[in-house]
Length: 194
Image: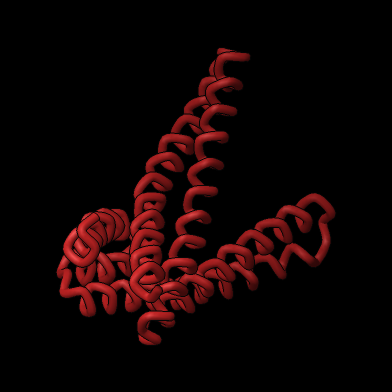
């Protein structure tokens, strides 16, 4: 039974890393498309620019949803691996803290928007919540990275160790996700023959 849970946990982590690879690609393309659509709208291209802006926004939203899916898969995967070895609990805790940070940051954005639209003092609560969200995000990423490092250590897979470390360093997190994806595939093949 525990080997099925272990395999499912490793697969969930691998899927989460795949989502983490795809998310920033879609977000970047979407944001660039949205900005270009907006700029071309100012240049007089009308409906074509609106379509480009909407398509960019949709791509970015899909990217953000994939990022949330990655967080969920990390929570699921580390939760399953925790049943095999309690040392993996730190990864689930980290992913949970990242999720909380995302929710708090989203609420901060809503408060800022409401504050601007209503010209009320609630505007000042947004930045305070945003700082709390950023602080929690950093803590959550560090804990999640430690979780991946522990996975790499337990299964003797250097790519996952390095990938876990790289998750901490913003621009290098993309490379970390790729290393984790490849490394976890290697672990699954070596341990389970799949």
